[in-house]
Length: 504
Image 1: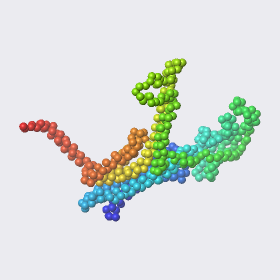
Image 2: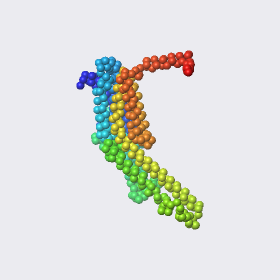
Image 3: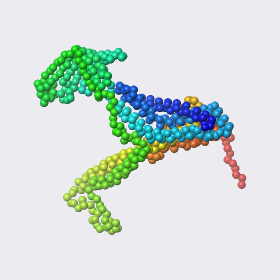
Image 4: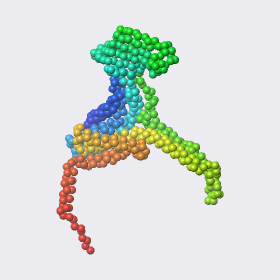
């Protein structure tokens, strides 16, 4: 490896790793801000939260790589140009393309890695990450009693406390509760009402070591229960009291109520329920599913015509005489017209009703076929994205290296601004192309590759300008050009041109 290659690569890897980490961190913060309402009060342990962040950090790598390559290559050649190292290279006979060669090889290697990552790691990370996120979102919130409000999220119980005193930090006795009212619902609570009520002056609430059970240690209270001798008579039908009911009151000084916490916490869902999504598939699976969906769409389209025949009462078949120019009178007369007992008005109403049925059938089939075709487009689009995200890394390298050689500015000032502008442009073009492709307004390959098709010529143009030491972003060039244009305009206004005369 030549010293020039070591110089360029040494200037590249530092900003690349830093930028990649910053972009991943920004995308993770976006995830947290978007789902913050689903994370709070769920009592997530650090292991579960760390797994979620790990999966989504993997998902952000394909998106972060183009921006990291763009910014790091721009900073590398910007620094080389700012400290006149590019000028020294060119004076020694080393061209700009030769100086870019090591980074070009690195960009190609990162593109290949990105393709492998999109095809192998991203489907697995999508499946794990989104299934875990779904389980977190559907998990019940942790137990949180509020003063003066009935808490009904504990299955089979309604609990109210008048006052709640937090236990000291590190205490194992739990929170101190005052003025407790606990309703125990029966299995048929809606029909038979609340048959058991517990009232206590005070108590404590804590969980066992395994956090599997919630324990209420109640002090100085009463337990009111109602027993019915006739189970066939409902609670509501007797005006609030069952026939032959017995009321029992039990007083206590120390009573423990144990409740299972099985309904709380995260319940893992079968991951196979999420495998239908296109983001969970690799390239081979996407290709197979796309072919299957295309065949299904074709078979469904062909079956529509045969199925629609049931909506027609009469069909005409052309025979040999129909193909001739002379047709015998009466052969094409509808059989309905021969039946004299049918009133023309009834016939018209039947025809209108039949036409409406056919229109409704056709409309529903068009909607159904359109949805099937959209599924084909989605899987086909995701197949193209396995390649487009990899190629975008190479395109961003062309733009970044060329821009750095032109503007000759390093650091995190102007390069960051330019990189963000181009990355947003890439992101908007990608979203626009995907939207048009999914809606059928654009051919799917054209929509998937639209961003690269627009930015690749820009990269080649900037590369050509950089090779010729263009002052494309030097404001003095535009100021001088503007002054010259104003000068010419003033001269033309002062001395209007005279039409030239022709000499014969």
